[in-house]
Image (cartoon, rainbow, N blue to C red):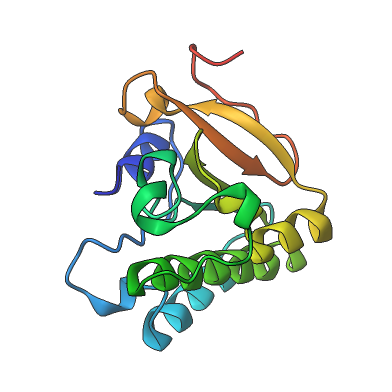
Length: 168
């Protein structure tokens, strides 16, 4: 993913927005840094009423294939501090949760996208988000964003219909 794939997909359906992607060299796009977090908060603040925050945090430290190197396991939830990259992923999840809280409190919608094998939704910040805003876990299809027909697990606040012909 990355490289603004979601933004391009949404624009193809006529939506406009601002893309944040950690891959560019611009440090304002890294929400784990103070500058990036403030820039992201400013962007969320500019969302129109009923606007959408679509967050797709880096998934590599959260998926099944990485469990051997990260130590992440649902049985050990809350004890995921095995390395610098794991702690950075924890910080990113916490920042994404904070951005979603901020968006929801202003009457905006949010989606947090992760692959189907993620354990990120079991992290304390995402569990608190789920409790606070009655989040609905859903499965979606990334084909609409040019990523093929891979399955992804998505959290949405309120029901937003997927325009993808692959989704039920």
